Length: 326
Image (cartoon, rainbow, N blue to C red; front, side, top):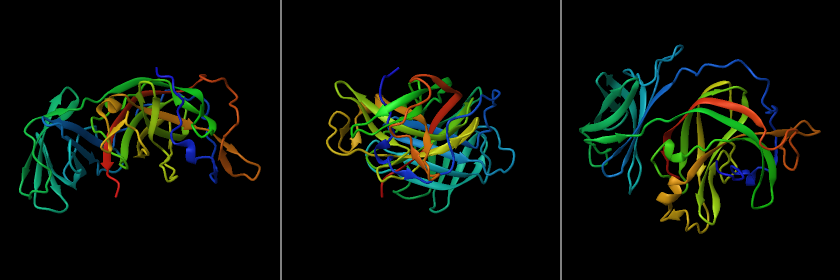
């Protein structure tokens, strides 16, 4: 387990926040069941190292269908993340979904046919062909290596005190299990990219001010924070996780100044990617006399540091989108 102070972009979070809900967890509840999935997510890499990310959302209302069971008219987004060059995207609807999945974009003349390989209950994307379209379309790939979905059976949250480089301090609940970014995706973000993750699982206590962040480790320099539920312009991106959750969380990937140990040509290095971790926190907020709320800066928890506060189970995290900065 890495020993690091998890900040998640708190530099900008010393101002008063006018929200009206507390977030100190709650009493234990019976073991919840995982939620019904709402999307099918495929990530694969071709022989050249280019990444294909396909997300198909269920168009059904009421009872959501089983995982990896797309149907005609379900909306999709196909993202092509090249090893070099610009990201390309296609959005539209599923045209057919049998032994292969046919995608028809909302605009353009191309049609994508996705080869899906099934192993047990797991379906993966192993090839893509393109019919029609021009030079700017997402390219075909005869053979791709799927990214295997990893499930964490149990992730514990512990009481944590933090302090950052400008002297701000505070407290939260933070994950006590290493969650490597490379477990979730092989896509390496660039400076300014907006990243979206789908997180799914259960927790024995609601997490009322849940946020995530990314940090990487370098020998001699420790951990460098790159992204969090606060972006560098101060936008709030927290969410509330109920005991059974299936949520999409958006963060901004940013770095400033000279970061030679982590960054090369506007992109994090391969080693920084391999040493990058996903940090999860449940933030604590303090009600002031005027009934507004502020982060509990400089206050003390009622429990000792590292006290077990909550437990997630059957956690999965998947990349669902990368959008370059405009």
